Length: 91
Image 1 (cartoon, helix red, strand yellow):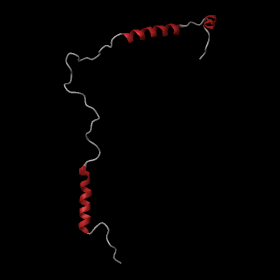
Image 2 (tube, rainbow, N blue to C red; image 1 turned 90 degrees about the vertical axis):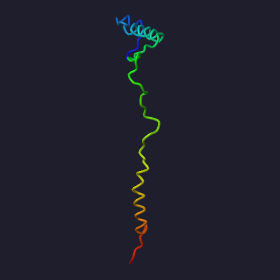
Image 3 (cartoon, rainbow, N blue to C red; image 1 turned 30 degrees about the horizontal axis):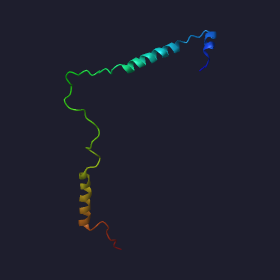
Image 4 (cartoon, helix red, strand yellow; image 1 turned 60 degrees about the vertical axis):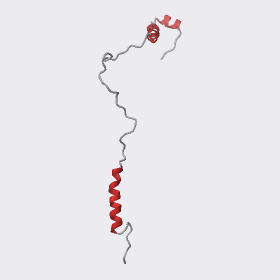
C-alpha cells in the first residue's frame, strides 16, 4: 500500500477512480437508509402455513429416561435375594 498526497497522484498521472466510487457508494447508502424497508415476503396475501414455526428450545426430550433405571433396580433386587452384594469368603 502506498500513501501519497493528492499532488503526487497528479504529478505521476494516477487517476483517483476509487475516490469517486466511494462517494457514489456513500450517497447510495444514505438513500437506502432513508427509504422504508421493503417486504420480500412471497405469501403476504395468504400465508403458506397455519401454525408457527418449530423451535429447538422449551423443554422436551432429553438424554435421561426414568425407565433406564429399571435394569439396575432388577439387578439390585436379584443380588439382594441371592445373598447380598458382598459374599463372604470361605477358606
